[in-house]
Amino acid sequence: MVPDVFAACAEQLAATPDLVDRLLREHTPDHVGLCRAHDAHPERHPCSIRTLAELAAERLNRMGT
Image (tube, rainbow, N blue to C red):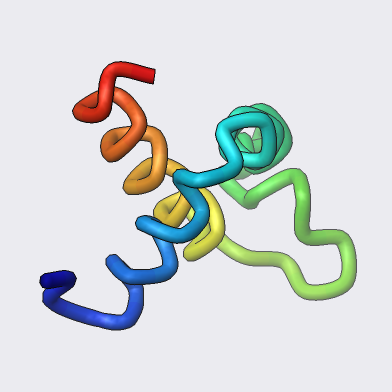
């Protein structure tokens, strides 16, 4: 069983490896340490979306995908 809601979201996101890859590519830091993918509301890198995508990528790696 998944321990929390954030981990449960990462588990669901892992079902779409292409989206995980895209999120990891787009949510990178700029020259001042802000996430490049957040135009409307600047957020420090790593943002929550990047963290979620990293958890999903870890799950994919464990599954051997």
